[in-house]
Image: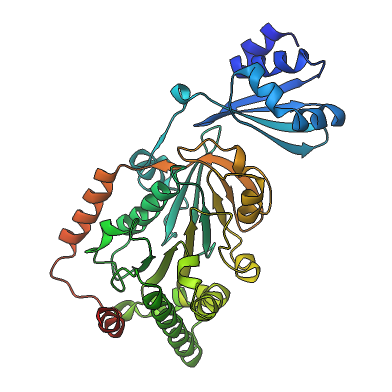
Length: 381
């Protein structure tokens, strides 16, 4: 297929890629092209030798096509996926509100009704929206450099839970030692405890959540319930809320805790799902010691935004790729089955976060919800 035919069938990016490779005597047969938010995905047939050359000479090809990002994924049988980053002016952000409406109120809502803790991870090339329930993941590790989209995604995750659940259905424990991420939510009625900033408070709160998990599990065993969903389905008047523990920059809480913080976290990721206790860990320092290998292994669901280097990507995903991302919500999602897909994560403005929180405060004002009162007293001391 000549350059003009490639352009007509698959677009400018596929044609430019074919031309750049041809100038180096590298053959490529384009079979498909799809545009994502920050990149164009070109699927092609290449010989194993040409694929190897491309992987080793990405910088040369980047110069030839005028891009600053190239990710190559071998699909087997001589098929390769080549993701070409788009210039800033051609990138398309994904509106949280638009995708939220489509997923939970529009034509895409089929199958979402039984998803108590819905997370919209983003949109894939071709338009598919990737949505998962945290109750099924059942924990999540998120990493990425400052400005890559990690913090914005975290806002969309919390807002999704708040908009789809009352405080009787989900409660948050938010831990942020750097006091940067969670100021929006200080008065949110969904909080299970005050926002935790001090490492000592973090250890105390994690152990308290661990104790609540054990109390629930003991009650389920005694009364013959399989899990929290089973309990709530037969106890409408005494439903237990899901507990979502979000820890930003865990090394700040782990250091000096003599293993207590990580020990509690390890038990939560091991058996918390049954009790409705879920852990979300976020870090902007993927190269740092996030958590132990054992704890990380029990969190198979990962979301990686742009990383500094290949080693950081491997720490998050167990493979390269995040170092080639472009920022602005460009991400790699690894689900519990090990599959890694590239997508555009949703974007939500700060003003929208404030409106969602204010709306929840007004909607649930005057109502009392059971919370971690003992912990409130300890944190205040």
